[in-house]
Image (tube, rainbow, N blue to C red; front, side, top):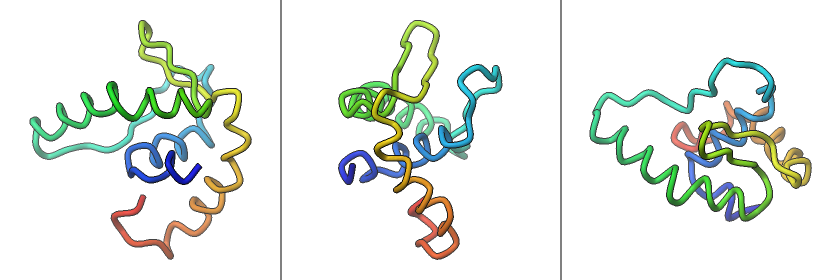
Length: 97
């Protein structure tokens, strides 16, 4: 679980899934970037590193063709940690979430 939460992009995605209903058509927005190059790099890293890692842990299911991410079979195992992080967001360093 610590490995899954070690990166800010993975943390944001998992916390967004706490409240996100996979049947809802509205997309989960991770963050906006001022720099287009930075945004492209984050998307590439998300696709090739972060999403596969979260799939391997079983925390998400990634439907690559439709670009859909939903809660995986082991999401409930990490849920208490995500809820704790979410509840204490204001006590964490600003770059942590």
